[in-house]
Structure formats: structure tokens, C-alpha cells
Image 1 (tube, rainbow, N blue to C red):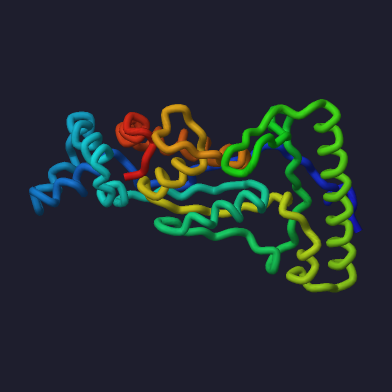
Image 2: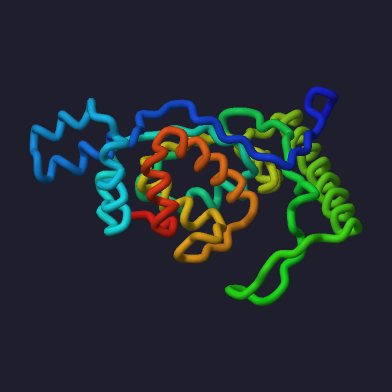
Length: 243
């Protein structure tokens, strides 16, 4: 049965931690210059990438994409399961490992939208927008979500206490449950993800992501921009289109 140590917790945030990286603007430069310089392109490893930002902008503008693949970033992400179900649609250039409800008892941490989350959808698919919810709508969302989460986790605990396997008992848990995963990508695959999972005024191609995955994307972008500032600036300059 649920006790004080397993009482449900409710969160409205997501977290993204960059746990490992081998990514720099210079990686783009030496990868590109092998086309014309061969083994001499290795000299670019020690060069100041600031001197080659014109090359990075050219590659981004004309969509020469492969030089942006010779790097790696691994993020540790904590978010609701429904976010990961959207995330896993991104397959090219990505690797994932997520915690398993078969092998560990899942913890009672659940997502409830914060007050800044727009609740009401207006219009039809393809031409809709989200607007602010009323205080009454926020109240009913919070009350109903928390009630459903408590009931589902109690059912989960009761099945575990009865000796039911974790992989069976987990079926009662909702997609609002928090999970965690490692996600590894390169800059090109991350740019493609960001082009679809963020909404920006300067984007050449409009995107309308669900807010919760956009929250993840925003944190990933901030951390990537610190690693590859010239590449990120070129991505911004040329309409946030992946090369």
C-alpha cells in the first residue's frame, strides 16, 4: 500500500542535464575541409573556429549537412511518459535508453500543468491555437489529474504487494507518470528536432509543438548553444532549418 515514502508527488517542470559531450564548432570545420584538403584538414583541429564562421554559415545556408554530424551530446532527461512517446518519433541520429518498469518499481512522480500552461484549444487541426485557461479550468485539471494519479498508483502498489510482476502491474499507470532517459544525438539531428519541437518567430517553417516537449527542447537548445555557439548562431540566422 502507498505510505508516506511513496506518496504521489506532482510536478509541472521537466529537467534536462547534459551529462557528456564531444561537440565543438571546430568539429564542423575539419569535417567539411576534408573534401578539399584531405589529410591537411587535421590542421583545423587546432584552429580558432571563429575564423571559419563564414564556412559554417555557408554549410548551413546551402544545407551541406554531414559536417554537422561529427560530434556527440548525451542528455539525461526527466519528463512525463507522453513526452517520450513524442520524442521517440525522432529516430535518425538519435539513441535512447529509458528506465524500465519491468526491472524497477516506478516512483510516484506525476505531471500536472503549471499556471502558465495554456489549456484551451481553439480552431481545427492544422489551424488551431491554445489560449489561457480560466481559474476554474486549472482547478478541475489539478483536482482530476491528482485524483486519477493517486488511484492508479494505489492500484499499482496493491498489485505489487500481492506479488504481481512489475511488468504486469505497470499497465495501470498513466502517461503523466515521470520517466527518465538518456538521449544521445549529434548537432544535425538535434537541429532537426529543434526545428519541429520549438515555436520561434524567426523559423522559416512554422512548427506547433506540444508545450511539454518544447520545454525539453528549450533546455537542450540552451545547452547545445553553449557548446557550439557559431553553429547555433548559423542555425538561427538561416531560419532554424536543419541542414
